[in-house]
View 1 (cartoon, rainbow, N blue to C red):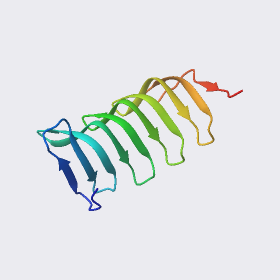
View 2: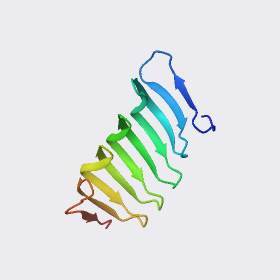
View 3: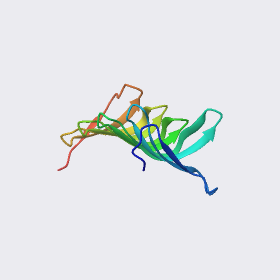
View 4: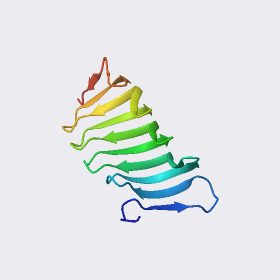
Amino acid sequence: MSDKKGSDSLNTDGGGPLKVSYIFPNGDRYEGECSRSAYGALMHGRGTVQYPSGAQYEGEFKDNMYNGTGTYTFPDGSMCKGHFHNNRLEGDGAFISAQGLFWTGEFHGKAALGLKLEHNL
């Protein structure tokens, strides 16, 4: 992976999706699959994006957005796991707090109604 800002490295061996390592000008880092479009290369497929804040998303991307199964980790270590649609956790998923509390339920955008705390007995 290159450490130069704004740099990228494309694997164009013709076998499946392109593999890329890219550091955006704002410091965000992406490693994973991408596809080419009229607008350039898009995060598309499986990959990981790391933010300067310490947050990270690992999972599936479509058209530069979190789409599919993934895990978003917040800077404090808490996590959201499940199915993402247009950068939002949608449907069945889990929230794990930084203290290790495990909540499950349905997520809809910013709402998470009816979450249940899982107990380890």
